[in-house]
Image (cartoon, rainbow, N blue to C red; front, side, top):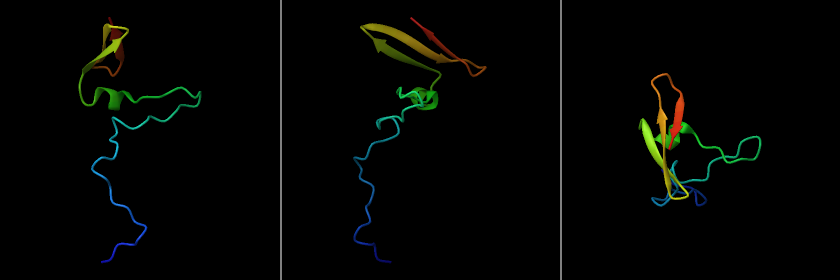
Length: 67
């Protein structure tokens, strides 16, 4: 089977879900999915102004952000 001239193949350097720019919400703010942010983990650390915060998913599906 021949490939059309204008067809592209995925580049191994193509952005992944975690690195591409997230879609903007209706308000124009940057929106991140908690699923993408946690990436299968229960907790992630977020550095903000040299401080470490922890974002944790609870068993009931809620999110808790602590310093």
